[in-house]
Image (cartoon, rainbow, N blue to C red; front, side, top):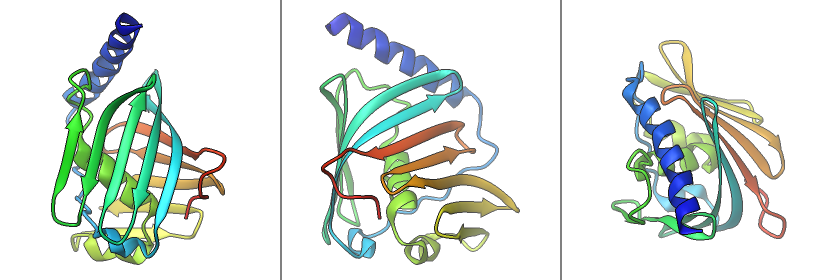
Length: 182
């Protein structure tokens, strides 16, 4: 079992590394929103599906947000790969030694906040040359007239995120029994 996990993570690392070698045509701005700006408490159990080119990886995540903290734990095959905690000022993480270095905590936090936080909170964190378009079902982060990060609401429990700048897609599905996505 340990060898299988190491093999799967090596494939993920290869996929991430091949994407990392290609310099993004633009760098996404960091959001780093205060946890309280979500406007409510949240506790979600989620299934994450990452797509890097032809590579597809599934992981499980536990997300909790209250007025003071964002906490996220991501697991692969029952083993915790990373736990994150964001208090609005400091991002701390605990990483498993087998987690690929291409998995960046800052990007994970930004994807979560871009996807779930209110549009006005996201807009307030953007540099002047970036804009956010949000019609309720589709949200786009735009720079130079081009959408670089897109979130589409598939249904009440599923979001699809496409990161054009970094070259990956992410499907976020809340598992039955958890809250529905905001």
